Length: 419
Image: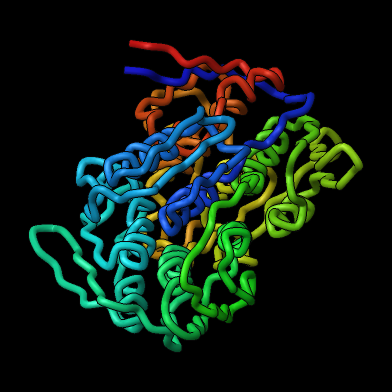
């Protein structure tokens, strides 16, 4: 079993390049199912989740060539199956994103209820409600959801909450529907904008991505396209916090500063110097005493839930107490027990966590309960005295490309060890 072994690594320095976005590349790969022409995706991160989506698409009948961490060529001239392989869907929630494209292209999709990180129930009700509004018939059997339609037709759809996955799935289904679809209260994340840019390159007619109202004019067919994936804003935020928690100075290349404005604002409130240069994003925490602040997670453009656990780890190391309020997922405090084992003082009251600062974190044997929790423990391990060992690191490797290599390049004492 592989683990990360981390020893105290104060004052990280140097530069790091951000990889392509995990949460953008997965729906873009699924969108390639909407055409029978070849698509080429560049800046693909080398991640386990990309491998899972690649296997899922090959199981459907697509040909996916190339290497993760570089370029993928996807060909879907013929779809051999409308069923997403159960063993792969169970590994990753984003697998449900093939439902919309399969329904639009083949008229039927049979997909197992998805898996992924255990950070909340995250039902797909909104996905199904939107597809049903487009004219799909929805059934379920033996843990599978089946969507079928002779012809999809445009509709006005209001989402009860701005779900990223539902917005993506409905958009992909609607591009080949007859007529116009309007999605209100849509999610506004940059990853949705990136997927829509790819679809528009393929010949889709979509406006409003990045706002709460998306308008889709259905077209008869889509063609192939070449597209570069945007940089990963969550990886960017994680390395910003790696610099901050170790009181170092790091230049982050290939980042989009606008995508991490909430993280930048909160770090500045704590006393960290964050500025944009011609070379990239510079995070400098070497000077002055750092103070605590409060954060509230919200859908984009609010503070991202995917950075909450990493920021909480940072708050344990600064002066004062901070309040963290998790408004997106109801079960995203599983990292708290592990941080407390390292010497943190965090108390949970419902969706609120009270984080006492100035903790003397100590290395311990901990385990990653989910992707972002694992990243938080790694950051805590960089600050803690002694040695930290993190198990269940497959969670971390789902979403961070070359995590160990990038941290060691900044001077961190971290290694992947087999036991």
